[in-house]
Image (cartoon, rainbow, N blue to C red; front, side, top):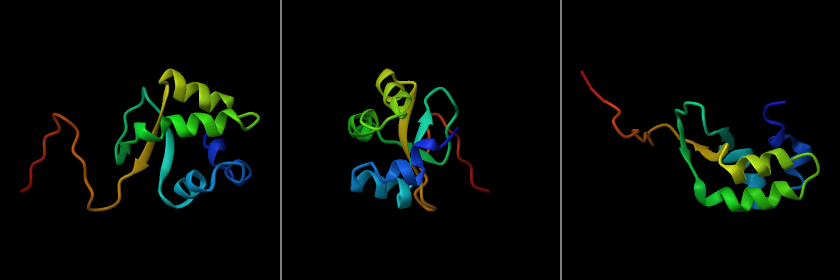
Length: 93
């Protein structure tokens, strides 16, 4: 099931800071091989997420995905905080 890493049951087992970022800060775990828009990668959170999810029964696939690079932590970009990808063309008429 997609998004099972952010169910209330799982969030209650995470450290308060990470749970809060998922609940209100737009922290998500994304598949690295898929196109991403409206998010910024947060590799600085990877190790903390690996440690947290490795300790929760049934969440080892997220810890493994983050470890092997198949998944990445991302944060949703707030309106007005647009980050342009390298090579992305922006034209304003």
